[in-house]
Length: 111
Image 1 (tube, rainbow, N blue to C red):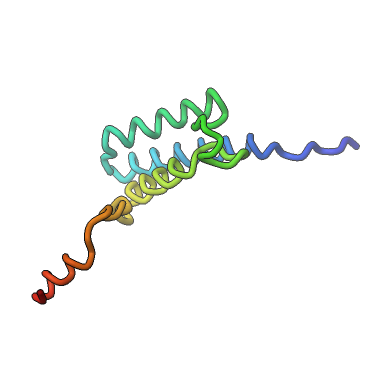
Image 2 (tube, rainbow, N blue to C red; image 1 turned 180 degrees about the vertical axis):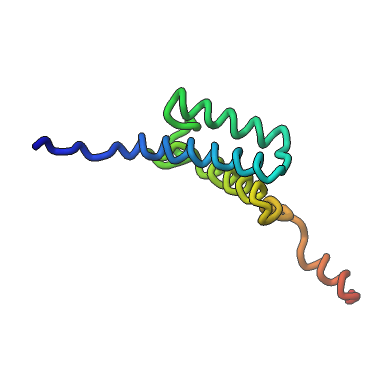
C-alpha cells in the first residue's frame, strides 16, 4: 500500500478562494441582484490572478503565506457575498477623523 501524500495547503486555499468567488457570482445571478461594475470586475480579476499566480496579491505582508487572497480582498468578497444573498448593505467604513466632542454638544442643544 502506498502512503498518501498530505494535501498541499496552498492548493487548498487556491481552490477554496476560486469556489468562493464563483459562489458569490452565481448567488448574485440567481437572486437577480445587480452587482456594480466594480464588484463584477473585482470578482473576475481576483479569480484570474489566483488562476495565473496561485494568489491574488503580491505583497506578502498583506496576507498569510498559504492564503490565496489578502485580508482586504477577503473582506470585500464577504461584503459582495452578503449583498448577493440580500442580507445587508456593504459594511460601513467609518466616519474618518471628525471631531466628536463638538458635534455631540451641538446635537443635544448644549453649548
